[in-house]
Length: 139
Image (tube, rainbow, N blue to C red):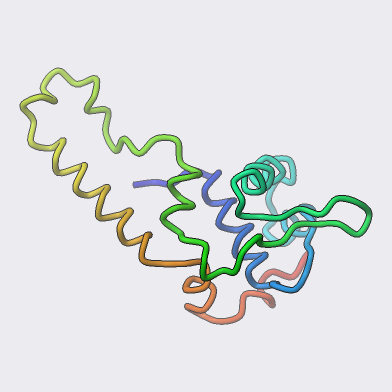
């Protein structure tokens, strides 16, 4: 299973903001910290705001922050939100799919993958290995 860059960027935004719970942060600041495209990040952030993961404050001293505590943000739900297609293999267009045993195996593998992600919250991920802030200093 390979997740899209979109999901990667969504996770990066949540990790960045989760490591700064009392701050409003700008998209430019996040993009600089990771060395990624601000334009791509803007699309991801807009989607996360619309989905209720983030809160945005407009204006000169505005920015974005998490809209709820990290413990209430489930990694599995986020991945389901950001990924369009979980079809591991194009079984739907295969002529042997109705009789092939691999279809069930792939479905089971996908279910297992997502159930592991469902066990973790953003808080769990933030607390796994230490403080991210020193690593995410804006360049």
